[in-house]
Image (cartoon, rainbow, N blue to C red; front, side, top):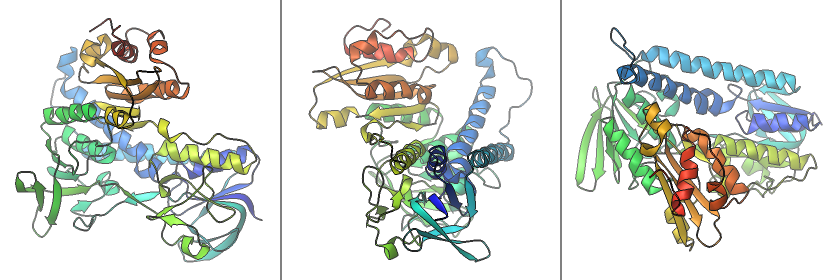
Length: 463
């Protein structure tokens, strides 16, 4: 065998799996057809956060006077410079992963990898040359791409996916964003904040539809305060790209409406990259295009594993990384705990930020729990007021019977950093009263967690 572990795909699932395998003494390699780091580092998590930070800096500059800072001259959003910074950050992170591969003695094999028989991977390089590699264990970590709707074909020019949205030649004057999940909402916020006229279209009744309804409504209010047009409960019926501008026909509760825009961004989810990687030939079981695995990511074919976005479940970088680690620890003979998918945090990096873990209020009621719910508004937070970020709140949901934390839902400044506390609390089964008695530093946004817990038990001090 050439390798103990051969990983196809170097995203946050694949590269983390390879590094952990090497740490455990397994000879490892990674097959990658593009850039090391996958979509997350090159076209997803990292470069989008760079763009969003640029937008935030621009907003601060525009409102500098609110903080007692005088800026002489016009404040402008330099779109090409924002894009360049984003690409530079992504390139730096990719080089960082390459360094980690060298440090951990992991070989990088450039090309498109596919299963080609028992313990065998065939890699086709850019020149079309095919090379076969052998491995005791093969991990599929091929990730996902933008999903296309039948009536919203991505042409890469006027109708685009998230990759193109990061590298447009010039800032569009107007844009329709279809889909308000994390990707759609983040791009809608970015472009609106730097001066593009954005229309956000969502099929579900609220934006960020996986979030608690109260959080979703707050984010929609914040978007509308930015002068963004938000159309929930609406669908894009067709897009006419024959003219200079796109004519987008949108079906709403009140009838059809046509919106004109320079660009249409399709952000309606992702599709797994499972084509042409040898699944059918190997007889690997799939369901609705996603690979079936057990709790340690073993497929029905011995020696073949799958992690990340090609599985059913949350398509999140941190989930793929955790799956990769659990997978290789099991391969190495360790005894890892299966991942608890009820305790996965989710973040949306708009302004205000959104984060959550566990059950929403609606889901908790559906599950039959009697609830104690506490909310603490950022308007009552000293740190939020000092920061000029008074929009938002922390909402905690407890089981009334045992005091167990069932869910945490946050919107406001810094909440994507604060959610980890709630993940730990939920994992350790901390009760509401234990959270109330955990002293939080003052003044911080995180005090809102303690105050929200206190509100659930009628002990809140500051509201």
